[in-house]
Image 1 (cartoon, rainbow, N blue to C red):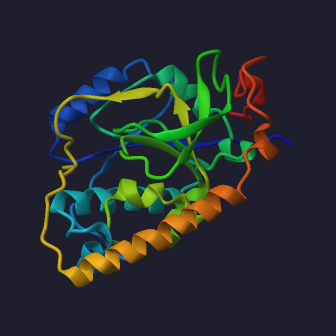
Image 2 (cartoon, rainbow, N blue to C red):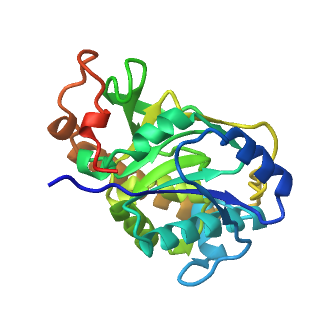
Length: 269
């Protein structure tokens, strides 16, 4: 029996960001897929809570208001997705320009059935990754397995299982949301990326107010505690990376044959 795929596409944006919303809408005029704006939040709502002390001990400084609002907004999108009839979720921030053809192809796929629960569609910094599947969508599109932190939440795709895992393991906010999402070793689901990325970020500050890091003073005790946590955390990540093997589901990487994700492999629309 073919699984029916229903993909929700949500664009996080402040209600007041009318110009940015107009810009995004203009670039999506020819999109052959439904999408909608999701009103960004400024403060967390239950069950999400911000722990400033933990942020200082583990992230190294308190989060700024924009970082808190960004985290709260993405967390709220995951919650709404779990309560919806959709089977998978695509999230964009409103400061991106999207390759809608690639997104439409991805939206037709049941990615979880292919072993992909978290698919990053963009990163703001260089990434540590390896190719696990050549020819993901076409001859020049590939699937990467991500290692360690991947910065940026401008675009990504989640299964229901991923959204549930993220909510369960990210209820306490003590680092920016892209850091929390990157911690696959915490919530137990490998992170992948489609490369080249099917979107890019406009220049300028996002309307959901990403903030730059600021140096803070640390006591010797807090610095030692952070170092010990980071060391333990890195070992946990290494154990997870060592224990998981992509070849069991994707086979050995080979730049041959047809694209992996095609209309023939998609669910009923």
